[in-house]
Length: 473
Image (cartoon, rainbow, N blue to C red; front, side):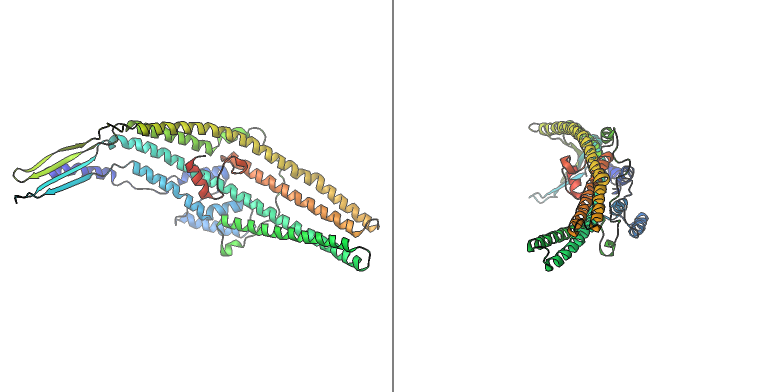
C-alpha cells in the first residue's frame, strides 16, 4: 500500500510533463514573414507539404522565362539545399526550449543484501526526483526562450545574407556575359586589322615589325577573350550552385546586359537611421544581452544549491517487514558555491553589452561608407555613359569620315574602334560596381551588415554565416 502511495506522485508528474512534444517548424512563420517584409521574396521549408508542391510549380514557371536578378533570388530561396538545412536551426532551438521545460526523470535505486545467516534477503528501494526543478524550470525556460528568439534572428539574417549573395552573383554573371560580348568585338576588329596588315606586308608597304606588333595585339586580345569566357562560365556555375540547379535545370537564360542606372539610384539622408532601426545584427546583439542576463539570473539562483533530490525510500527487514520513509539529498556548498559560474555569467553579460555598442558604431560607419561607395560607382558609370562613350563614338565617326576621304589609313580607324570598345568595357565594369554596391546598400537597409569591405567577417555560404552568427558578430 505504501509503495502505491509513493508511485502516484510520479504518475501525476509524468502526466504533466511527459506529453510535451517538439514542433520542429516553430519559429519558421516568423522568419518567413521577416524575410518577405525585408527582401520581398518567399521562402519555403521543404517538408513534403502542399506548400512545397506550390513552390515546385513556381520554380517551373520561373525557369521558363529569361531570369532577372529578382527571379534568380527567388529560385535560390526555394531550391537551395544549404538554406533548407539552415532552417533546422529553428528546430534545434525549439527542442532546447522544450527540454528546458521538462523535469528531470525520477531516479530509482534498488539494493538487495543476502545475509550469511540464511534468512530472507534485505531489500532496499528508493525513488527520488529533483525537488528544486519546480523553481528552476521557469528560469531555464526563460534562458531557452531567449536563445530561441536569437535563433530566429540568426536564421533571418542568414537568409537575407544569402539573398544578397545570389543577387551579387547574378550581377557578376550578367556583367561577365556583357564583357564577353565586347571582348569578341575587340577580337573581330583586331583580326580585321591583322588581315589588312598581312596584305600590306605582302605588298611591301609595312615592315616585319609593324606586322608583328599587329599580331601581338590580336593574340593578347584572344587571351583576354579566353579569360572573359572562363569568367562567364565560372560565374554561371556559381549561380547554378546557389540556385540549386542541376541537369536540365541549368539550361536557363538571362538578359545578357546589366540594367542601366535608374533615376532614383542613391537614397538621400536617413540611410544611417534606417540601418540602425532595421538592423537584425543589432537585434541579435541585443538578444545576446538578454540571454546573458537570463543566464546570470539562473546562475545566481542556483549558485549555492544547484539541485535537491526529494523522494521516498522503502526497506524490507527480515523480521519487521517493510519500512517506508522520506529521502532527501542536498549538496553541501562547502567548496563550490557557484562563484565560477556567476563570474563567468557576469563577464558574458559585460561582453555582450560592449559588443552591442561597438556594433552600433560599425553599422553607422558602414551605412555612410556604402552610400558613398554607391555614389562613387554611380558617378563613374554616368561619366562613361554621358561623356566618354559619346566622345569615343564621335571620334570613330570622325575617323570614318577622314578614312572615306583618304586622310587616314585603315589602321588608325581600327584603333579608334578598338578604343571605343575598351571604353565600353570600362563602362560595364563601372556599371557592375554600381549594382554590387547597390545590393550591399539594400542589404544594410534591410537589416544586415554586408560581408564586403571588412564590416563583417564571414564565409560565402549560408552555413558559414550561421556559424558566424552563433559565435557572435
